[in-house]
Length: 550
Image (cartoon, rainbow, N blue to C red; front, side):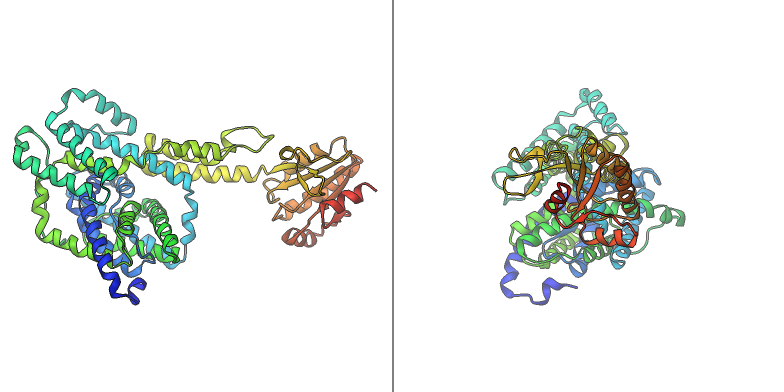
């Protein structure tokens, strides 16, 4: 615990203080905005930030990660809580707080059980597709605040249609404030990145409301914010709801863990230290438990605020503790300043934070990176990364955030199973220097007359044994012998071993000799344990080809 502070050097204090002040300037307006995404009073975002920052510093393994309310988990929270409570009421806030506690308990249990490998169940394409869909959904949900019109409930497309049908009701004062705030954030990010654009935009919005009396022009403002520290304890939520929240909390944990772990590893690699996934789960769990017991919302590691922290020169989690102290000062003395904050300014902060996540070039990259192997059909199954990303994105846009995540994960796993059940069989040829390579990729390679030399690019097990057998018999048709290169076949199970024995027998009936080369490691062990006695087994492809030519 507190590893980064154990050998603290006085020279680190100044950069940590500067980084803490810089992150605070970004965290306060974003926490207010992300609380609005979750459907709870803005101050709940600040309640969540303080214990999250402190407890992650105690239990987490990153020196740079900043933990607090985030858009993805806030949107997930809103979609989950809406099932159990009506938006805008005390019950809604209570269930939001309960979700943070349940998420924390699930993450803490997962960390203690050393389940850090769970992050691998959300592939990068699924996570990116989910975040892309979530960003689009949140942005379209914030546009009504930017225009000063009523929001239409429903999925992304229903909300977008609602915006179009209400354009005639736009409040020009609201639109003007929102667009100026959006321009401030984006402009400062582009040309003066060291200045916290979110804080400047929030300050502009507050000053504009005060000087121009925009409240009289029907410009919506945040309104009263309770000053002081939050009440500690459990929310008043029925026992059945606590139990019902366990399943959805797993989804929140997985998204928060994957996003935070990615940010933590990015800066750990830059600074040369190691991230412990299990401690990250414990840190995430402690942060959410602290947030929940302090009347806060779900939290997770933030890539954007971690980037601000690292860019400002943070050396340890002391910067996070500085942010926590400054946030406490904000709760005690500065909440009154934010009461005149226009909703349009908060919407601008959210939209500006999410615009850079809307990157359709990623989909193009996944499509190009997942090109099917030569000689195979170009299908969506042959492009699993692209398919999983699009499925997650469309799932969020059509069905909501949590279903979109589940759809993306399920499809990703199904595509993995499908691809492993269809390993590619590569025809090999001999180059002039004697090496055996893919015939389709090397023009100087030549096949051997009357011999089929084939490599199986994947493990051999019960789900693909029939497919591989059929493919090998097709390759051996009309040949005198078949040589199977097992070097790229790292594993084989009992079904695969029996298939090889049956293949040997069937080929012999067809007058084709079967040779196995490179029966290495676990493959050799399984063949022996399964009592599969292949007559022609050789250490190399060249040796097998020479034997076949005798």
